[in-house]
Amino acid sequence: MTTYWNRVFYFFVKWFFFIALKVYNRLTIKWTSPLPERNVIVVANHTSNLDPVILGAVFPRRLRYLAKEELFKPFIFGNMVRALGSIPVRKSDSQSAGTALRTFLKLLEGGENVLLFPEGSRSLDGKLQPLEAGVALIALRSGAPIVPAFISGAFDAMPPGSRWVKPLHLSIVFGDTIDSGKYIPFGKEGREMLLRDLNEVFISLSKSRLPGESRKDP
Image 1 (cartoon, helix red, strand yellow):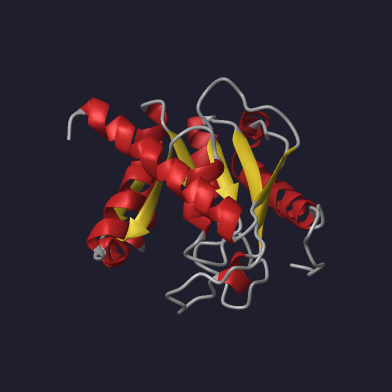
Image 2 (spheres, helix red, strand yellow):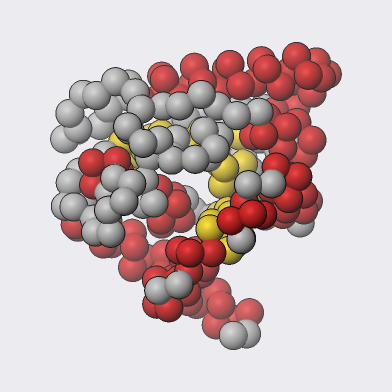
């Protein structure tokens, strides 16, 4: 495809998923602050394969993220998630911290907005898992601001192992932007500080329920 048609297909896919999620899952969205003008790192909790689709549909800019190549095997769905910004990687590469680090830093240097799931993998019980150090390393090396997001309802709508999405309510809350630059002078201690602060932000966002949600602690 040419760049023009790639852009057209991206907006088509984005709006298709956005409308489908709004109608089928009654998706609600909350922003607590405006986005920075420069490119950002979006970080979110991860309980379902539905998470990157939700973020790709609602975020106002295209997000780039790594996804296992198995997700691209269904031809139509594979092309749609690729259009949203996903980058297929082999299972061996997805498990390599060095490969992921280089890929994300290159994307950020090129002005792209990237999506990271700092828990490392999907939560198998729907609860927030310990955050891995990779997100802090990428943020501090790039200096890019962080936009935290918390998704609620995705685990129930499409739990691990499920191939279908249930018509249950979904919501996403975007928190205040985190300035990663303020942690850089502290080196390794700064990475640990950032992870602690990010974990606290996730816990806080998980309690920011929107109309129609039931209360479940992470």
